[in-house]
Image 1 (cartoon, rainbow, N blue to C red):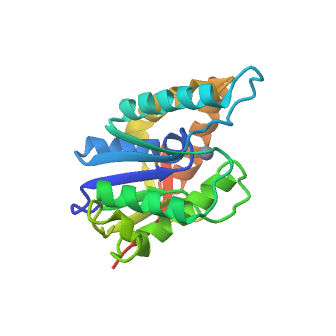
Image 2: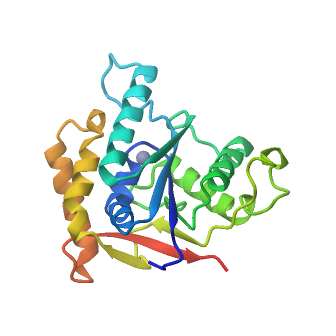
Length: 231
Ligand SMILES: [Zn+2]
């Protein structure tokens, strides 16, 4: 990663998305001494098969789980935008909120989800696609242009992001070796206990996919991204 990258903002739809898609990469970035923050768009309040669970209780549980997972990886700041799970739309409000968070944290690198539909339906959840697309629109041009969202001024001055990593497994630009931090990624993922009936099975699946992603480079475990460099 380029030396000029000092601040990294990971913007995802749900609590647990960052750990699944980029937990190893985040752990490595933190170990390199760079500052990482999370922005989670929804409160994850639909992610339960427990019929006695209420959306409010689940949102509180998932926020706590996300804060714990971030702590495991060394991420100090976690912001929740509080949008309802499963209902994210590409609205002006969401674009303003995401632009505000980019302007607030002022990252050099933004990590986000894939805006395109793929046939991996879990990774290609509707909220992931919508949030991924909105994040790219906010990186360019909305967070950068002072006339976009004049109501954000003067508190949130425009900010230019240098690079974007888009979580992406299909012929990715970057295959990132996470072998050294794979155990930490798994530990962070395990914090999202409300999401897993059988964590051993989830761990096996995550390790298998990560192994598959690393195979082309000879890495034991990897995460993969497309990389966009802003000029
Ligand atoms: Zn998700």
